[in-house]
Length: 336
Image 1 (cartoon, rainbow, N blue to C red):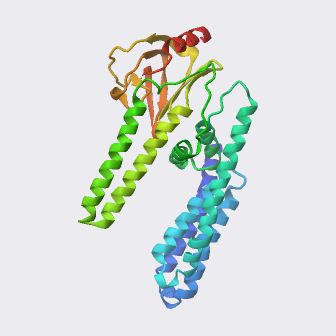
Image 2 (cartoon, rainbow, N blue to C red):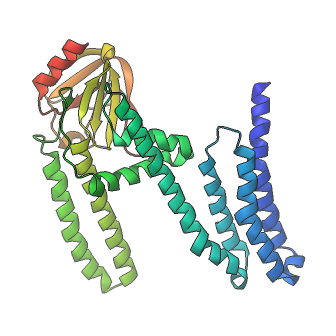
Image 3 (cartoon, rainbow, N blue to C red):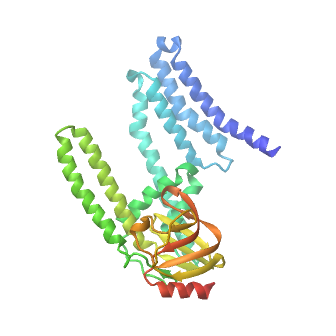
């Protein structure tokens, strides 16, 4: 019975706005529209950009659906208007895109920043937990954004935050461990950035002789890739491995992470011997065999490794590199 009521509620919440959007599309194809394009274009524009988001907001305001989901309906309205209205009758649409949309985007960004700062302050009140921007950002965005867009948005924000905003040196606590100082990964990734930079200049000069647009597109993609790699490198400095409250928080920057209950650890071995990676045995590093390891953790029960953009992979054995491997092993054994 409850499932039926919930289904009916969601059909109304999403069905009514979609019906109005469909109705506007149908109207734009009628002979009445052809006879009065100016007047009806204005009405369709206001309905798609204002009426639909407003009705949707009123339908979800007393539900658990994030209020930020109003924005996708607004974006859909912009796209539909652009497709169905004659170019000569898109005056109000252009005004909306020029003046209103940037304000909406800025408001959402400020809203996210406000809640992230609020979440970090709440974390700081609890002295038994370490403050982690990436974790706080994810939990905040899950509360205010549609689940489908959370991980891509969080990843992009985190890349720029760790790459260009968070420069303060992070002091390690006794229960925290680094994994980037002696592994050689940072050197490898920085080398990749330099190679990308050199190749970008070369390819841009060559492609510009053929097609300047393609040359600039590839150059932009290369620069963007370099920025992402730089953000990944910086995040490794700011997100150490930690042991607290009976759990082991394994982080590899913002690229990979997993949380293990200490009671689930069957054994921990300090070893650099070759080990076959498969569905049961994973590596914490996203570089796989390109990076060495010196610790092998075997679990009693299967666990989940979360990678970039929320990609999940199961594992029962995890291999990783820890700078102070013996101290790391001892702390786990003493805390278990």
